[in-house]
Length: 223
Length: 204
Image 1 (cartoon, rainbow over the protein chains, first blue to last red):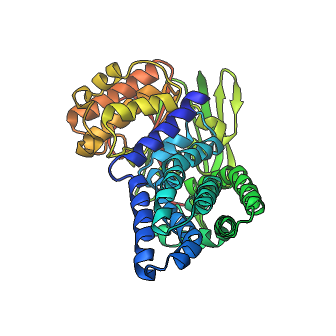
Image 2 (image 1 turned 135 degrees about the vertical axis):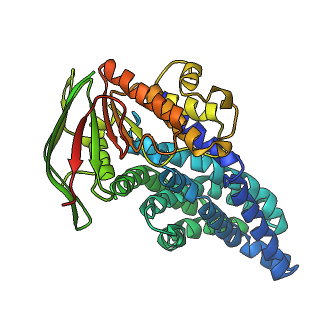
Image 3 (image 1 turned 120 degrees about the horizontal axis):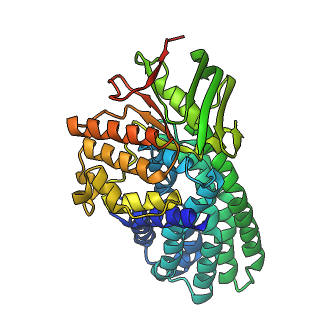
């Protein structure tokens, strides 16, 4: 089953990187938000370092949100999802493939970009490290929860507008623990508690998401 | 190999609308079935039901294969080649990439070149799909059918957007598929151009 599975992952990654794909868009959005906040807040480095964790985490979540329509909506609208559903892969395997591709094209690049953006906030080394690690651990949960939302809104007209309303409340714990771990690091405390909770949330989301997304894709294919 | 598809008292309900009721039909390997009916009579619904996307409100649908009878919709889907009325083509990918992806997704080996030649879009292999006409996209759909190696072809308006040569090609492909023990179920308003049984859907 690895051939079909891998082909789907690679194809989604390819689509994300092409023109009209949203990988670059999400990165640019993240960078712009992170640039605008210091401009708006002013050159108070203490304040900026203090809010960096929260702002960058919210920015990363919103940026990932921009790319969620790519997950299922495009394939649903042009009929590709019908063909994918009839492939040897189960819809659960399809959901795992799409989740992987989404994280590699969105969550991972956002994480890699974050230390650079932390410079704009004057975030000290330990804080930047905590931000990086928390994003690395937390962004899979963003993709996983996002996949559930994206599959639920498939057959809604302009479902993209409802999508944030569904998933942002669910992502509150991720932002709290993620930004919290940065705050702990700034105070010189170990952030392992927050990171542990973040990892627990992430693992649960990644494990449950394929089943939930597959169930809702199944419903939408029959609608 | 598939041997027959048997529908008994098939009823389709979508939302609270009854699309058709108590439909009986049989298709054997090597046969083609044309589904006819006015717009909205449920032709697409019937195809989606056979494909396993929709579940029947009542009645049964069994696909007999050499490995036993299959009643489960998703399992049945593993025997189905699908040509829907959406083109399922990504504008950012080129024709070759698109077909290669599909072949790998379906675990189908083999070279895509003869298939592209067969459907008449070999020269467009390197062309991004956004430059394809509607008819060429349909030909790519036919190429996917050939590539899929599936026994039961479900075709929704297979002739739409095709030129005269394209229609003849589609009819040829269906004829060849039936001749090798395949099964074709097509929803169309046009004459199929090959010997086929017909199933008429009346609005319920």
